[in-house]
Image 1: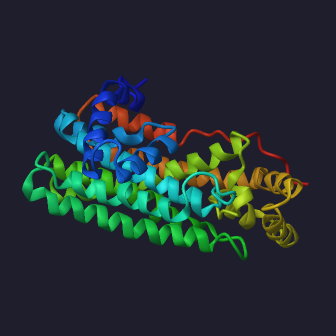
Image 2: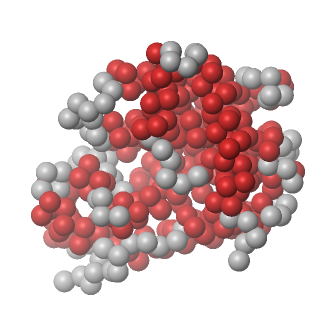
Length: 329
């Protein structure tokens, strides 16, 4: 058992992270101001289910033994993902009924929360001057890669079922890039060598893909099945398509389109995704990324207990949660 889980690390620093977010919001104006209120409403509307804001603390702790200098990066990570998740919901049509903020208001508040406030944080006096530009460059590179990955995700929501390689490429952008950004930032802040910083980015990329696998499973295990209703090109969908017969692959394509409006089609499509063959391919790729992430952490040989904390996070991200496989008919 690890001596420190990422949940433990968050519990120890939750108040400090919240204080960092509050400090970031001051750049949006005084309490009650229009922009600040919009940013606060976005943060309230889009709470994070898992406290992954502690990732830069764990990396900085693994490099130096002290996680606290990375607290501003924890706020950057939280703000970035809050905005990204909000935009993802909008892209999925969550606001189709007109509830809450308008499309333009959402776009403006997510721009402020996900990009402008993090840039202000990275340019604050609390971040060493020589590092401000490299850290801002990490944020910009991440944003470009994430937008590219999200565009691939949106384009993949129509047409034939994608191949696993194409889905993984999209995941590497929309999920791997933000994790690589924050682990790279933490390494830079810790004074890590260029070689170690590159390795930390690689670890972040692997962890981000694993976390996307985790989210895909949770969507099914929770019964929400939002990916099915949205026609999302998930890795499990690609696994089902690659492992299916020609007839079943054609049927899967028809069900994928019908599932947007038909609960019955969603139920049948889910049955195809949960077949033994599809889950076998899925578990194979999850395990491959899990092993690579552990191997990379082993080579980095970070300080304890933060290295064990990161190993624990990898295992939690790779933990299976899909329902029992369905035998193919």
